[in-house]
Image 1 (cartoon, rainbow, N blue to C red):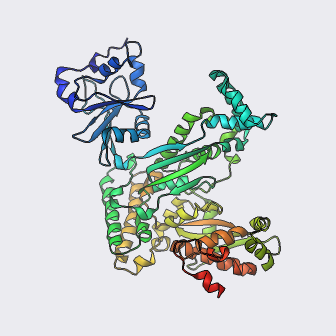
Image 2: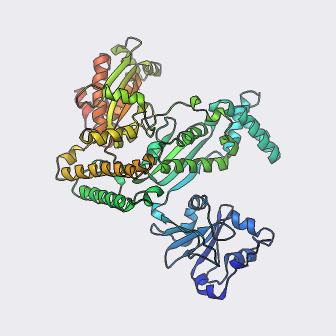
Amino acid sequence: MVNLDFLKSRPEDDTFHRGRIMFCLIDGGLKVGPLNTPESHIEWFRREGWLNDENAVNFLKANIRGFYLPGANKLYAYRSAGFGFDERVLPDLMEEIDDFQQAFGLNGETEIRLGPKDSPIHGVDYPQMFAGKLKEMLRVKLLDIADDPQLVSVAGALSCFEEKSSIRLMEELSVLPEDQRFKRERAVLKNSFGRGHGSIGDQSSFVFSIENLPRAATLQLCLPEYLAHLQQSLRRARADRGYYLPEVIKRSPLKIRVEKIISEIFEFYERMSRAGIPGEDARFLLPLYTRTNIQTIVGARELCHLWLMSQDAGVPSAAKSVVDEMMYQAKKKAPDLFEDFGFNYERLSWYPSSQLFALANETVSRLVNRRQPGNQKAFLLGCVVPFEVTPEVLQRAVKERNEAELANLKHIHFEFLAPMSLACFHQATRQRTWNHSVESIYDAAREALLHPESRMVIPPSIENSEFASEYRRIQFALLSLYQELLNRNIPSNEAVGVLPHSLIVYDWIHINGWNAIHSIGKRTCTEAQWEIRAIARKMARDIKEIVPAFKEWAEPQCITYGRCPEVKDCGYYKKKQS
């Protein structure tokens, strides 16, 4: 039996113990200890009946415990038979942080620390880690799922082969003894989802709210076309929002230089905003390590896809850790649904995603090198028009809302190569009805180091302001910083986060005939962001030239709908009708 006497309270600990508030997370629920007590955790646990001589070590290894210091506004957490912590303590703590905020009145300035307050203790040197202030902490929270996502998918799979409906099969499975039910579910998933029948994984959806992740991570999340997102606008960035830095940069000799430059950028952002530069333009200089929030909904099939592609070498560790946590939380709810049975993790079985963080993309690089000279917003690569598109066809499709004809338009294909800032790409890639293949960000960065002026976007509102020269100076400083990090052997997937949103990447976009009306209409509207609006207008001109019948309809969205859907009506459709 392990001797845990060193965890008991001692007279010299009395003042410290009375000044802290103990807590323990048991089965995901927060338990708060008594106030002004000289007790230690182990004495509190014994008194409550949670811990005894037989289960003590296992209990301490299984449950996070710690304390809050109200005067210092610091929260300490650990999980072990001593005062150690594992890699799950921080994410498990953040899952339940709402309860901590309510119990202790935590605020954005609260410091989260892992391990004991002081070390060594009784001759043992315990690790200590400052995780960050609460306002900076990454948090992944699974918001919503079916009551039992694994059961839903299994019942749906069985209903494909049995006379009974899925609800009847769910009822039958639910009354089985737990071990029999889980054995049955695992067998069904192994022989269906695990053999490449991906639609079974689509029967369950997982909604995640994710706080304080860097924009580099949201770029990764938004690449697969079968995920949907509600993304916090970068226009809402504030200097006090903070930024993320990976551990490898924090430990490098360049840490102070990186922090100084990024802090300078946030201060410059604030100065431009106060001077009247629109937020959507001031944001272009913000680095990819700027923190943001996002809500994402994903099915099991695409979460498997997202997870596997996030293990690739070029993906920033911040993006990988976010997706790892999403998978961890989903797997807790449906373990066998995410088991690797083979074909449910077969890359060829998924609808391929664009790969911004691929170490290279040779085909797109060749297209970029073959592009026509000039400062075009989009280059037409080719088109396929397999049937005669007449004005009458489009009239039926749009005016009569004829969905059969609208569906036919999906078989018209236009291919464009569009240079755009990363800020613009973040919008474009969320246009899920466009198919994307994107230049590797590492190829784009190499080109920017050689030809910075042609690989960076400066918004017109800044170009025509007193901030233009300083904008350029800081932009080049970020490129130089990226190169310095590489020279100091910082891996490219970690250095990439210092690159600004103004960096240009080439997006190879497929737009079908329906999108020539729908998404072109959205993106040519005067309310659309200026950069993507300019790209969409160039696409619209090319489409109209190739298929003249689109001249009336590859227009801002008010023309398609016959009325303006925006709060601010510019009156364009009224002018066209007069």
